[in-house]
Length: 237
Image 1 (cartoon, rainbow, N blue to C red):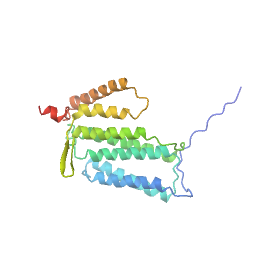
Image 2: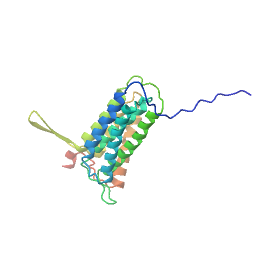
Image 3: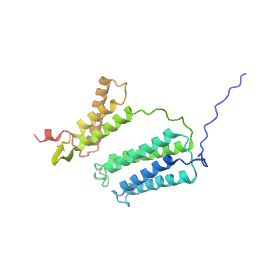
Image 4: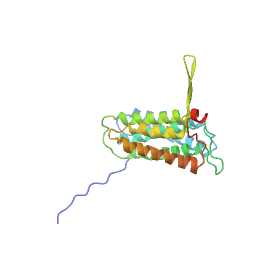
């Protein structure tokens, strides 16, 4: 009979009392706490959404205080900073959709689904952040810029195409029309697909069409949200 060596279970422990202060680990949640406070100002604090944002703000501020006070050493940078980045993305979604109609009784408003998704994202990201504090991870390697750049570009494209934008340039008012949910969803998926070097464009086009149809089915047909489907210049004819 041969003895087999079992791998030691990963210990979950918060590493405190480190000889150096990790100002990046403390400054990042502090910056996010300020962003959360600014976002929460757009919501009634007596509503569940407003209370949720203020609790998130307090939690981030508390994290920013605890790390230098206890000299916490972050041993899993990927999960810690990745979780904080997702919290920042959720706060951006809350802020961008703060002027959308909220839920009235059992009737969904235009901002209900984005806020539900952003709430779930922030909650999941908080768990990832805590995991990064109490577990050990591999050191961060080289940064991959291509993926995050095109994913963020896809989000920006969706925001511009779904609602349109009006801005002034050199005294001239330039209006970018709203293209509607169908075109915005399709283009967003195609732009985000460029993030991968292994993208197969035939399969990606089919998937983009399927995702677009799914968005129409869920948000327009099933939930009855008042999304514009086609470009304004086509609807005007």
